Image (cartoon, rainbow, N blue to C red; front, side):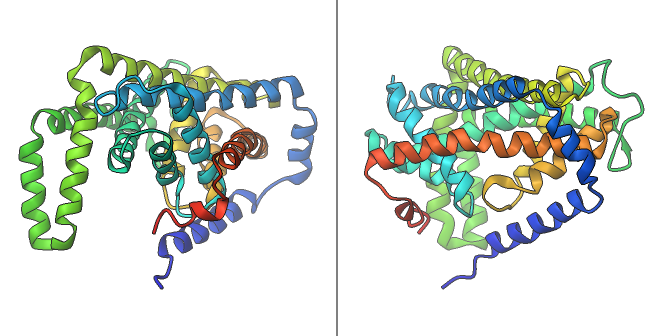
Length: 333
């Protein structure tokens, strides 16, 4: 039996980050912020935040068009809801595997193509989130003289812009030169990890096929449109929650906070990304003059409440599918 190193590292990091977030917490002040929160705005923020999941499901359709054209929305939505629920309550970030597996059960799409489409899905996420974060840092309302990790924010803005260009060029290189890329991988794998050569070749081929959306302007435009809508809606939910708890910051601040949180939760963590979400929120919000107690109050309120709707919806669809939660744990094997 293999020791779950990834889960152990995630748990350790979660504990450390939660300790860091709460070590100087002013509980009385935090409670005062929560009691003063505007409840209708809180509910609106959670509602808008939940809407990103149907948007994510709809974005999946044009990515899969080369494998299964014009898939109906229902199986895409059900698979997305169950996958997001799994990310919230199961270890080892099993949500993506579960999402791909559910789509394979509900449609003729093979698992390899389903999973590869989600790699493409995440590539678009990374590109758009980074782009929006960089644009937010160029906003005149971004705090003058703000520093991140001891360096001027402008340094990171410039670096981020270069990364956006590099990612874009890398994606197009995979699309237009897949054979050369696969050949380079084969030479590398044959020398370093021969047993992964065949699996890696298949994944790279599927990934390149999934990225074929870049060859078709209409499909590419569709994926980009739904990706932008998804992340602008998520940032809008953050911004509404800012207003709900009394944080005075522009919408571009929500875009920036979103980017930092996305980077934070991409690291190994426990289900629900606790600790990482809160730490990233505090680090980014204090740049805008928000007190730590208010930042923690915002992060905890939004984080906990936003997990509930999609988890309940995912469990509902899981029950309707005839599967049990325990069965999902076997998928990774």
